[in-house]
Amino acid sequence: MKGVINIEYPESLANSLKLRGKDFENEMKTTSLVKLFELGRVSSGTAAKVLGLTRLDFLELLAKYEVSPYGQYDIDDIKEDIKNA
Image: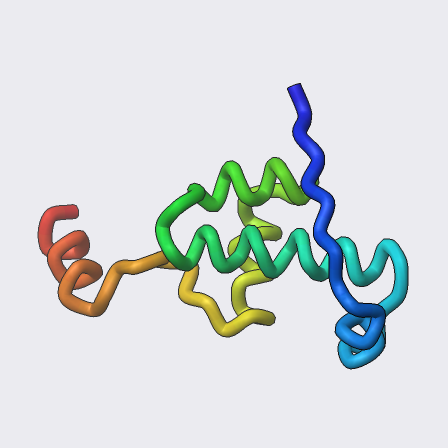
């Protein structure tokens, strides 16, 4: 089952990003999923699937948005994971 989200926005928003039509829609979809991943609300696999990307491509995409591929892990969590590996 697929859902559809309709969002009203002023045309000036798309214009300020210098995007039109599908490009603006794709940017909104991508940034929403990147933010949901950053907040720990969706997995990288889920976000990648919704965007039609491989998980690796999604993880690489995070760099464009300056989001850590480790999600909400902080340095202490990473050190703990390494110690337990």
